[in-house]
Length: 116
Image (cartoon, rainbow, N blue to C red):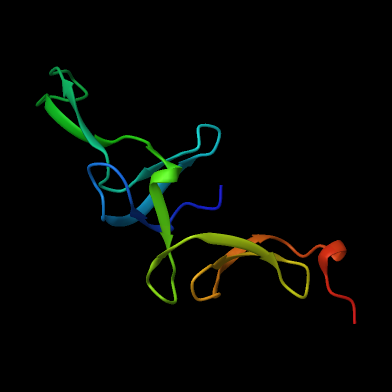
């Protein structure tokens, strides 16, 4: 999965279509994300010592990663994400629209460094 925590994403499918928000948690094994303010549900809570008032609590539920697109930091548009190796061998994510880098994925590796 090429989306990380604290990335800005745009929802492209579902009830919250068009919403831009921050990723709170990545569930890589399920290929899902928890996005701030998206896919909210109500949990009905009985009064207890922990929750003295009770009532309905609103919380975010996971959304499929295929239903969101990363928002590029430089062009501010929702875009597909690619992965490439830089000259020093570090792996980085990049915007498919403008080509700008969107953060590193792995440290430098000699195997992928371009020799001079």
